[in-house]
Length: 189
Image (cartoon, rainbow, N blue to C red; front, side, top):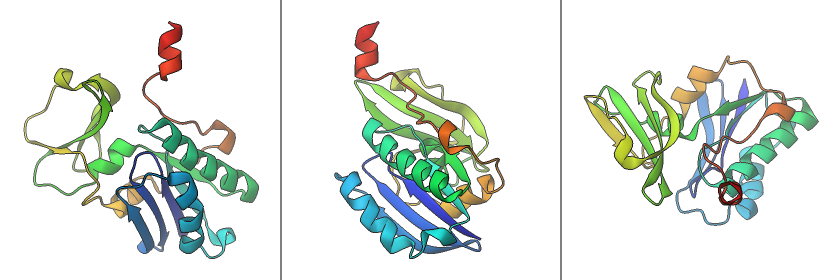
């Protein structure tokens, strides 16, 4: 089986191919400031023939509004045009794949003005606190936890193995998971 993994949700661009439970290609740019111009070039490097991909895993948020849309749009387009199944994943769950010696990983992404996107997962990626947009000071931390706010030691195979047999999403039903309203939506209310 050949899988394509796409994550454009933050300033960290990750593109990978996984073949028979092994990472065949892995690209990460932790200081990416130009996702749209880089992602297609990296995809061409990752997959020589897109028709050989059996499944697409795409991170659909939370994170940058524009970044999320780039990855989701690419996954939807490829999935629809080539009839490739799509599995959506959480950015916060991806962060929680980091191997730690604590019982829980608290995944945090800065959402500005004191807010964060937060999710808490145990070592098997079971949800302790559902992904949410929350004031950082309002988080109720469990005992024995580690805060994860970077991509230094993520375990891509761990999240792929957990979701490998999830039901795929119809490309038309794949939606970004922003977790918060856009600034324009907030101003309308």
